[in-house]
Length: 509
Image (tube, rainbow, N blue to C red; front, top):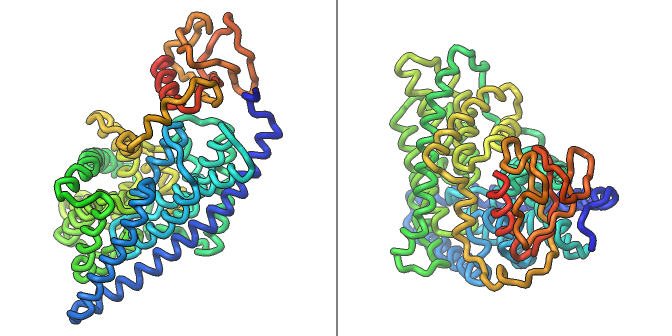
């Protein structure tokens, strides 16, 4: 039984990551382009419908037809619902089995139809699921199983995010921080290879301009850093509110008595009057972020925009339509930053010239606390705005916002959404054959640091096959001492992988 990954296998997986990244880049670029073009068409139609009753009726009929088409896709494949990130996390954790081809084409079509009319949904979650499906399809084509298959799925997910946002480093970091929660070298290298190759395709299609080319005049002086602390607290409080409301939306929708696959009709019908009144404020929100500083200093306008984006983001995502929350979260963070900057300027506490800075910082802080992935947030915003000048303030505000949500017992939003998925119990109760690889890191302060392997009460359904200490590989024995920084390589049953991971993490904490 082959349990460890040899150097030639690492090279093979890295090359596989490059191929998966190229394929993900092509698919996600087409997905991204289609949504952008369809949104422009709908914005023009909403504007024209203001004085044309016939066009209003036609738009209502059109969005209902779109909703019915998407509902058919959801009924046949419920796992294309929402962003798709929780499904990818469950699949990589060994809690779900997904069929890649139905996911790929139905998410592609359903995402375009669901997001294109202007709903407050993002393209990045679906892009991650599209990339993961491509990685799974490639692994099945090359007949990879176990750890190699999961690594290729993860690399596809990283490539999907990279192409969606032109953010290759953040794509790889998201997989490590949000999905795996550890820095496995094997996953890191393969995901990075996929992200870079996928991003090259996206850059060829969309150009070198940053996705969020927010103009700013000056770097923020140290004397104004106290604003980062205060804004971080505000972001943390509003981030926890976001988590609570978003997780309550399925229960609220269930009270409508409308079947789950048809609930998307509600936001699709509502987007018609919203689009007619505010055509410039619909969609995922990247255009809003770029133009926020052009809206002036009206707090009434900015707060109204914040309420509109928050409420309808909840209605859009809560319906279960294929679409993500990644970009809407960044959008809300940017608006909160603008509201804060204008408020402080009106009080004479901050020059308005730093509004752009706080917009950029608040995007990272808001995503850091809601997703509880601060490193991803910092790198993502850095890549999206195309500047390295904001690393220190991004780190400060992300840390403060993260700590506030942590003190309020907020969990990572994608982890919380994953726990609400309908997992097939038959899949989790398969035979106890040790046929999958699980890697666990021993952190500083772990309860098993300094102990002999024979003295640690490891579960019976797990077999320790190797210990990595830096680049050195140690064959474990009963008298082998475990040290902080070690990576324990174990064999588990694939169907019990998530359960064993939780047991091991509890054991070593």
